[in-house]
Image (cartoon, rainbow, N blue to C red; front, top):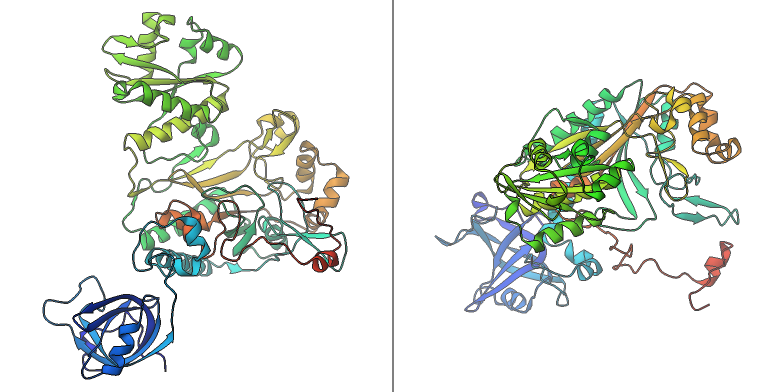
Length: 588
């Protein structure tokens, strides 16, 4: 027997019991010949102690044990001496006097300390991830992830959903992010792909009659990495039949509030039910389709004033169909030139050519551009902004998208700089009425904003006014991060063909890529829709972590490499040749 108890289970009520415990040496202390060791397992810590006289053999083994040795001990539970209890441990009232000990495995000196949460380079942590996972921070994150997913499964089951596993090897139907290709050995020159999501499969399940489907789904995208991306990630995937947007929103809000109530009890919910913003409202007010609503900085427009001013930059942008967006910063008049320059650099990240500013000083205005405005024009801008003495007004003039996105970046920087963000708050919102299509400014190619199976809000616009067509799509946003997104799907073969046509997908190409879907529609497709949550992102926010690598057991680094296993790696030539693939090495 390796253990009678886990290392968080013993207390004063176990006094005098003989126990067997196993675990790792978390910390070792030598107090005048008596050895104290905090023994650790997944559940907690228990202090064990040696007696160099009565149990000398056990003492000698503990004397040579070092950090991360794996021990099995037998001993007797006793109360700690008066005044030496540790209130921070569930086992803090007791210790175990060791009578015999066995070293199950020795350990080399770890490359970083396991028992302390000190800063360690991420590359080192990822290389020795199995050691990093022994630390409290990572262990707690993985347990939290498990508990969140467990509650999701329970909630979906109670609501009549069934979990259906869908294939990992599927047909490639390029319509979004780059896919991972998997060559077929049996059919040379052909490929499977790893699914970006189970999108088509869950729609086929609706046609099959499974009206309430969900899955904790593994998904794969061959794209550049950043803090909230990984080449493989996990979704809560949901699809329902005979529903509308409001049905999916209610399901999601009920589930999300349940998760918050259980795993983020310290968080304040800013608004419930969650506010609903159109895509245009979100961009127009906050410069983002995933706005952080924990603070209230909103944009204002001065188009009507600026079109008559003498400032050429503003006039020319407006004449070309652009906009002039403004942002008021309470008390920002005290910002230094350097701080203003830093804000301007933030705006330029999204293509802005500059960031104009005006400082309100009573009834006067301090600004390099003030000379281009009449006094009554400046007064009108002050009135529109709701500005007062000492406030700073910032302006971005460009196309609607560039001006909004650029000023949105500045807004986020100001939120952090001015301490406007309440870290103890969860601010949810829904973003709806996305554009159905977007055009590549360089190539002129039209693509779907979401995916080609998203239903249009007004199908008649597909022919008469496709550039203004809105989608029945919705994103769930938490604290400025998109944690979920979905749509009502097209269930009409005729509408689907119109969308393909607008996307310049020929009948032949549509048949090649999506023939299985089009044929299925001919057999009675119900109205249906769904959503997918990015579970890694969600757990990241619940765990208060800076990126999703901290909540995934074995993540890739920011360059999509597995530093622990050494992947990707070269394979033997004969194995590659068996797949009918020729590899061109860099040196060639």
